Image (cartoon, rainbow over all chains, first blue to last red; front, side, top):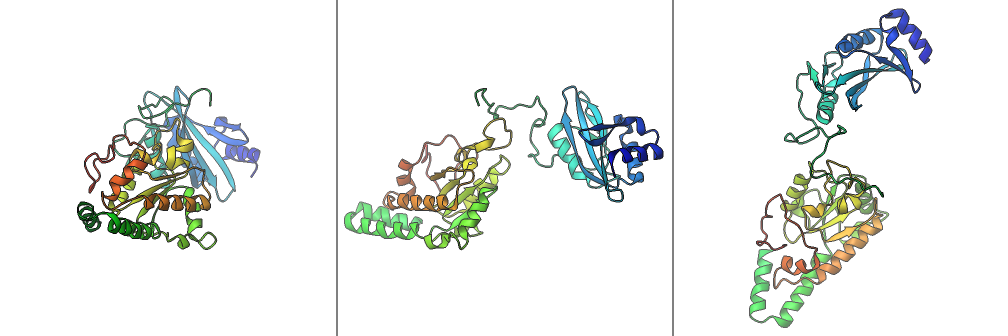
Length: 153
Length: 195
């Protein structure tokens, strides 16, 4: 399914999602408010995007950008679902109830970025040691063991 | 090992000389030619380590082949990136090996952290932060021939050891000075033996 067809299909079926649709780097992106995330994800799942390929976060400075890649086996299509979480209160909705695949990936996102997922049944660190302090993939993370790269390299 | 050391100490006190040097030669010959390896492969270097064991490079002709149990082995080949979460496990495996034991740091990651030296929160900058490394192999990853050369270098090093003063103390001269090990004192070693 071409991206324009996907957009038309989406606008026919769920008109309220249509204004949120954009095209970035050749991919369809739905940017929603974070309190609408679960609703949008379940709508997309009902539409046929039945697989959560991956989820992660991006540190954009003031906000964290949550990124979910949903794929549809019936339509052979993929779409990105995004929302912006404020840095001061990094909380968003968990999609575990929709896709159990989100269990560990949300734990990893919590581990690396410190984003808390409301409704996650077992939100604790997954990769780093349990006594780790801080969230290392944040841009402002630092500890006394990191050696900074000098300018001349 | 303790028995061999006792024999060495008593020979050193009493007769010394010809008997001791001949015994050293035999023991070092035996140790250097049956270096069973503890394959501590954690990253891409492990592929070269595996390749070295198989028929094209045939590590077995040097008397070195991988064993899955640290208690069977003489030399730990640290092949790959060691993260700070993995380091206590590596340290524990090293402690489970019976004396005498040696360590080969294979590849840039095990030598110094390699490409993960800068701006990394998770990687140990070289296994010599917590293990007494005997031979370093540079490369990313090194060829199996380099690993074979490291074993031959280690064999040359073992030739200089004597049971008279204990193998570990003799080897101290050949090792770089290590910093404080934050994982606690190694069991079975003398106090401050490695500085």
